[in-house]
Length: 389
Image 1 (tube, rainbow, N blue to C red):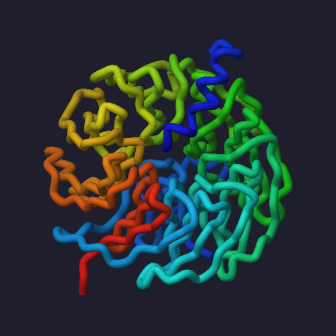
Image 2: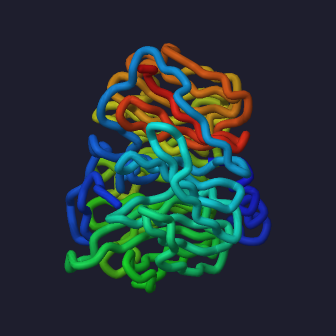
């Protein structure tokens, strides 16, 4: 998440009071989802439809820069990694497919505006939004456009997906600054349904147990039935929700602009707990493990709390705000910071294990696969870190 993303939310307050393999198959009526990304891929933002930000495998104790790839604009998009390819957007208006092993460009797909949206790779297609107000589908093999679905305003958040209720089609979900959540057919781009909220939708919708859950600049946590796009409930959050929500065991985890990080019981429609440290907002989306929740803050800290109670476990201090969303990999946590560094810290106690100074802000979130960390930077480059052979 990037600070520029919320400018229109804050402006609105004055006037509105207030491919490939996927980790799991989730249907619009299903109770099944995945807590972790699969061993074979990191196919979307946060790794899986529940947006939990947990990767399989491990990271090596010693990481080195393996390669970097220069684009023509800041890289605030986060990578998807499938079948040995890296898919990532850029502020130059393009999405790139790169070779995971070498960083060499395979293809580039161009849009009419910067691409901060993080790609979704699904059954041979790559889906992503653009600030030109459109959702795109291109072929993962060659980048050729399959379709383009226009919304009423820019798309900054990542798409998610779900199987149709009959199981015969894939549906793609994306939020837009036109105040609407759009559900379209993955094969054709035709609209299945549209759900309208009261303000901009900046993050990605999470999918869990036949529902999608997301926040927005209307300060409401929306719970929507996936089958028909109908409201299940609305829960007051108390402030703008700039990041994406993570879902696990009928609870939603997210931070907001008024300096709180919340856990919401979705069945009861109320707060299970609230974490508040200092008076700084939360733009980072959380990583949720079996017993911990890890998230960045504008207080220049990476926080870890107990999943059941919200009690503080540790806080790691960076030298700049942490809008980047952390990824948990085994006993380690990877994250970027506006101080220009990529960090790996211990999940147990928050001690720094490794860092690499790039020098420009990192609002992009890591993608982790096969012992490698992929992350974009405001300097316009994509970086790959791993063990040197």
